[in-house]
Length: 313
Length: 313
Ligand SMILES: NC(=O)c1ccc[n+]([C@@H]2O[C@H](COP(=O)([O-])OP(=O)(O)OC[C@H]3O[C@@H](n4cnc5c(N)ncnc54)[C@H](O)[C@@H]3O)[C@@H](O)[C@H]2O)c1
Ligand SMILES: NC(=O)c1ccc[n+]([C@@H]2O[C@H](COP(=O)([O-])OP(=O)(O)OC[C@H]3O[C@@H](n4cnc5c(N)ncnc54)[C@H](O)[C@@H]3O)[C@@H](O)[C@H]2O)c1
Ligand SMILES: O=c1ccn([C@@H]2O[C@H](COP(=O)(O)OP(=O)(O)O)[C@@H](O)[C@H]2O)c(=O)[nH]1
Ligand SMILES: O=c1ccn([C@@H]2O[C@H](COP(=O)(O)OP(=O)(O)O)[C@@H](O)[C@H]2O)c(=O)[nH]1
Ligand SMILES: O=c1ccn([C@@H]2O[C@H](COP(=O)(O)OP(=O)(O)O)[C@@H](O)[C@H]2O)c(=O)[nH]1
Ligand SMILES: O=c1ccn([C@@H]2O[C@H](COP(=O)(O)OP(=O)(O)O)[C@@H](O)[C@H]2O)c(=O)[nH]1
Image (cartoon, rainbow over the protein chains, first blue to last red):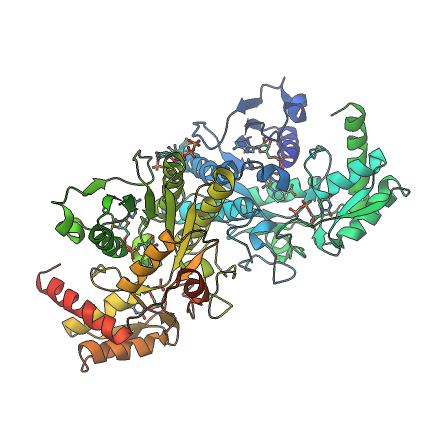
């Protein structure tokens, strides 16, 4: 059994990861500023002696004794990361720097959740890990995209310069229970809208594509990546099944409410036109691939969203 | 007359910039850690009451009262920026963050010397400012390239979030007197080698291209960029005359010593294959273009190098 730090553990993906690590019997420490996360996502663990929550912003140093670090702390949805772009950049740079410093001192293995956004608006399709990306350095999304790119650089330089054992997961769009209802992301928006009987807001033409990974598959991939020896280089973790946003709207209608309507709203700047992970490396190196179909995942998510909307979340 | 801060002012480009600003009658403060710079580059100014030198690393905050900030502090040549990649990243991120904080507090106009390396190994030729680049986020050059990209992001976010008046110069390869003799860059290597009667070390095939800007032209461009109102977006400052490295070797031979020989050595990783600035924007917006031909610039540089080599620099 290990002592495991999960930064951002009160958030969407982080809390599911914590559930799994607790189920496996580990000691888990969550460090989270609660900028977007919620203590309620972790409520089942507060009375466990193997669990601890620390309210802390990773832009400041912190001293802990651990064996593994899952570094997730970072706002993930456009409305949250654009809320205070300078703080987003500091979170990516200083947060990663501090957690790498901690990993260096404790000799802990370090995993960061990077993102498909490092590929930007990709000119290569599907995206494999060797692709260097097409990212606007000075746009409104740059605080997130460039922040994650330089966080990856830091990881590699801590590996090369200090021998820190690092793992980089490049996560593609992930959905499931506990997504913030107000995070503005397409799946949470559509499911929330369908449940409230509102129109689904398709931005732009709706011909842009994304590939949606259910959160249990995602967590599975992260744990495999952490615990596989000698993984070199970043690994894409995502579902390669690609949908246009219009197709997604149709699946949400089928899964939640066939009578709901679609409305078209303006596209945000620098929105990537297509995105689909090449997961050959994850299959080969980790023996991982996702198993949950979109329709099934949406139904599981809808149960959670229905209850939270009813409770006024 | 203005109070002007020049970070990195003891370096190659910085010291030429300081000469110009002092000639124009301004008060000049240089902040420099002397990592690669030298006090001797500034010796003619030490007895002026309008001049001050502060030994300080920009990764730490500093409080000064100024009207303009030229932020150059950053190692610029591959051997220097690879010497301590983590410190290079901190210089780009924290150094720029601190200087932007200073600009915000003092309402100073802020200019950063970014680089053609933000275009990486470019797939668009020549490189114009709208091109998003082709940069490896996790390679050996990434501490510099990604560091500068995220520094640009910071500038834009300080502009959008705090109204800081920013200027971004994307500098292309610049050469001239006071280049460090040991910085490993192609022009300083070739001129030094030719003067010592050593073979010119052409890396790889020598078919890769660069475009070389003489330092007085460069400084001219930076000062114009700082003092032109309402410049939006980054501006390339460089010489569009493109040479292969083999052609450069031939010009150096002609300028310094026709009898010197060429030898071929291995290429370093991720070396960009071609580079040439599109300077349409600098011409249109600043009314700037370079005037010094390579042969003439090399001769001026050779006078300086000859004397420094003789003095055992
Ligand atoms: N959800 C996705 O589709 C997706 C896609 C790509 C990458 N990711 C990455 O996965 C990670 C988790 O994303 P998520 O979807 O669970 O988002 P989330 O917003 O639900 O979780 C992020 C957590 O980090 C915390 N946090 C943010 N800034 C912090 C700081 N400075 N200090 C301490 N805690 C801080 C938040 O409070 C929150 O609990 C992020 O790193 C994100 O970039 C997610
Ligand atoms: N020379 C070129 O061809 C070229 C090309 C593109 C961009 N640039 C940029 O122009 C600027 C100046 O480059 P240069 O060629 O004069 O290099 P240089 O190495 O001669 O000058 C850099 C100066 O910054 C100082 N410095 C470095 N790190 C510092 C830190 N953390 N705190 C304080 N001072 C620090 C050094 O001591 C040095 O005096 C750099 O920002 C560089 O990235 C130069
Ligand atoms: O247990 C630790 C060890 C380090 N750090 C921080 O991690 C960063 C990098 O640490 P490192 O020791 O590599 O850097 P240094 O202090 O040598 O620059 C610094 O901000 C440290 O304060 C931390 O937060 N917890
Ligand atoms: O209500 C919404 C929210 C998002 N989108 C689109 O869905 C895609 C995914 O957006 P999201 O913010 O979920 O994630 P990201 O762009 O970060 O992949 C983008 O093309 C958005 O324009 C949409 O059509 N309607
Ligand atoms: O005169 C100044 C003003 C600010 N800063 C530094 O610039 C950074 C950003 O300053 P800002 O006020 O924007 O940031 P905040 O302190 O509000 O996070 C901080 O590290 C400050 O210490 C500085 O070095 N000199
Ligand atoms: O002694 C040298 C030093 C550099 N180069 C080549 O010259 C080009 C410019 O290298 P430099 O380090 O001057 O600048 P940068 O690569 O940053 O443009 C690169 O293709 C190098 O491979 C070379 O052929 N011989």
